[in-house]
Structures are given as structure tokens and as C-alpha cells.
Image (cartoon, rainbow, N blue to C red):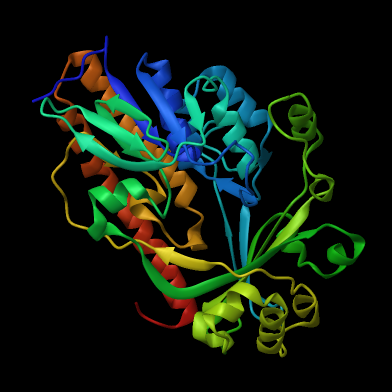
Length: 397
């Protein structure tokens, strides 16, 4: 059985997303020879979404995994997340309000731009992160070592291969194909709306200080609203980071996020129309919100991606290959736990691998211990997130 040895232990991570980079930071700090390979041509080669809610679980994982100076940079480039979540009906009458509690400054709620967080996590990993590398397959050698093979014929030897390559993970496809996520049949139609006087006039005030969900009560759908106004210290910190592109002008004054969720067939549009005909999608949403409060109808600005989720799976035989984040447990966005669970994966796996290296324990035991823990907390988050979606849409999956 192959054992971990600090002098030559090698970890290859496929995917330079949040979980993969957080893991790389922790392993680098532990003295591990770690390298990250990403198919994107550069860190900012494509849009990375909007703001993320980093909850106490994610905050604690970042604090554990990151060097002090990188965690401090995360704090400076992040804003405080709103502490309340309010549920309204379609007439904007409050149904419930929940407030989050903070355990300590290191177990806090943060709001951070996804691309900015990715850039922060790259700090100090520039020479260990390789862009433009599309993973093709892996090979297993007789001594237990692994070879990561890429489409450009690059071959990299590793003791542990970590798939951190998202919901469409090629590592998962080849290693655990039976764990592929399923299409829930629901879609989220959303948009970023830059702040303006007009938007301030119609946006529910609760969305300025926390999250908001509109549950109409008479239709299987829900509308999620949130907003972000950058703090001066955030913009100053970003301006001082040469590696991070300037915040787009449209975002400097803040923006609101609009997300309308329902089953795909609720819109009475084909999959092709949902993908390629934004005007038709906008008309469909407007029609389904025609009896809603006028301020809510005025917010309709949309795009249309689908929602996928994983199913809990039975334990598999652990090897030197493992998966983190969406590569193994993608989940619906209804509890905002996807990124935070990926960060917890990084914390858990780095702890197990570091202990194995220190004590020269078998690699597989470290991976197995991580996977045993991950299957419990991650798939519980998957179940909870999917349960919220099914209750809101009045259906069972």
C-alpha cells in the first residue's frame, strides 16, 4: 500500500475553482508539492457569476486553509453579508423573517464577488497554477502512482489526483460515472440589474440589507432577490491589487440579483427557446407575474440557465483519486451552500492528507477518511437544498 512521504508527496488538482484553489493553499502551506491545472486560458477568461454568500462554515474553512496574509486579503475585498432573510408573498406582505447569528469574527457571513475570491485564492499560487490545460484521462501505475493526462499531451505524475472541475467533472465521469448529477427539471431565470434611482424605488427594502424570497402561494414558482453595494474599503483593496481586473463601472455602484425559479414546463417554452430566445422568456415570466405586485413585475430582466443536483450515493472503494465540490455534490442554489461546502471539502481533505504526510500513513486511508466525512455533511446539504426547492415548487423528485 502506497504511503505518504513529505519529501516527494505530489498532489495534482484538476480545476482552479474556489474549492481547488483553497485546497492548494492549504497543501502548499503544509509543504506539499501541489499543482493545479485549469482548462480556462486565464483566471478571467470567462464570467464567474455574481456575489457569493460565504457563511460561517466557508469562513472557517478559508481561515484554516489560507495563509494569514491571504485570509486578510479575503476580508479586505469582501463585504458583510446581510444578516436577515425575508419571505414575502406576491403582494409584498411579509410571511417570515430569519436572522443569522455570528459565532465569532472568524465564523462570519461575508459577501464577495466570485471572480475576486478566485483571484484572492490564486495569491501565492501563480507558479503552481497552470491555465489552458484540459484534463483528458488518468492512468494508474503498478506502484499506485497516477498519471494525469491532458489534451495537449502533457502528462503529470501524482500520488493523489483531486477532481475539482465542477458539475461537468471529467475526473468524476471517468472515475465515478454513476455519481453524475441529474437535471431536476427546474430552471433559474436570472439577471444582474445595476443600481439606479429607478431600481431603488421598486426594490423591496429588505433586499438592501439581506436576502429576499417571494413565494406567491398560488403557483409553483419562487423569486429570489438580493443586492450588493460595495464598501469603500472593498473598492480601495481591489484597486490596490494589480492581479485583479478593475470592478466594471456597472458594478461600482452596486447591483441587484433577480432569480425566478420554476419547473421548465411551467414556462410553456421549448428548451431551445429557453436557451436562445430571451425576449420570449421575458414575456413568459411577465405573464406568470401578471398578478404580482407592480414593483416586482418591473424587475423582470432575465437569462435562463438550468439547475442540476446530485443524488446521495453509496460509499465507493477509496483510491488515490478523489473529488471535491460540484464535481461530486452539486446542489440547487436555494440555501447558498455550494461554494461553502466546497471550501469545507478543501479544509477536510487538506487536514487528512497533511496528517498522512506527517505520520507517513497510507494515502488511501487519508482519502477514505475525507470521503467518509464528506458523504455525510455534503449530501446532507444536497438533500436540504433539494428539499427546499421541491417544497417551493410543490413537487417531488
